[in-house]
Amino acid sequence: MDVILKEEQIESLVKLLKRLVKEGGATYALLTDMAGNLICEAGNVSVDATSLAVLSAANFAATKEIARLIGEKEFSLLFHRGQSENIHFTRITPEILLIVLFKPYVSLGLLRLKVESIKKEIQKLLGV
Image (cartoon, rainbow, N blue to C red; front, side, top):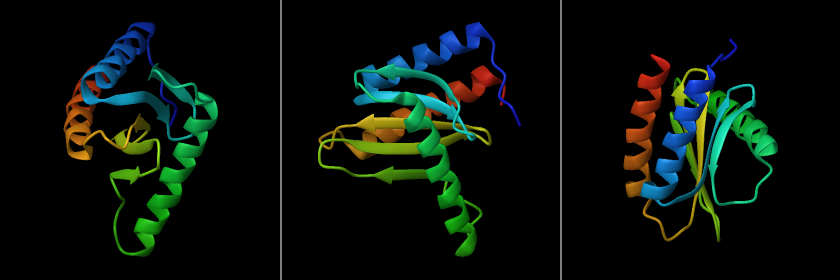
């Protein structure tokens, strides 16, 4: 299923991602569809957004298959901890994935609360 968004929706999504970066302690956030097509991004990290979108979608798809193998429908979010950057993935809709980079000193609990709030706003914006 293709994700088709209007220019105004993209602008609103970018504003939401910028708010997540500002208020949630994230360094970078992006939205991608499940095929790995970059929808929009915001933040202060120099990263190959296209590659990150593709690899993140593939990672989420692989993890969905792992969940299926162990009897779960899916895992709704993923998290990887690094030495200088952490990454948090959450499914916004069946076709849209939010990827958030944040520093290890940022509270995962606080970030998850902000992500959940932004997720609801994105879903509302998209009419989901």
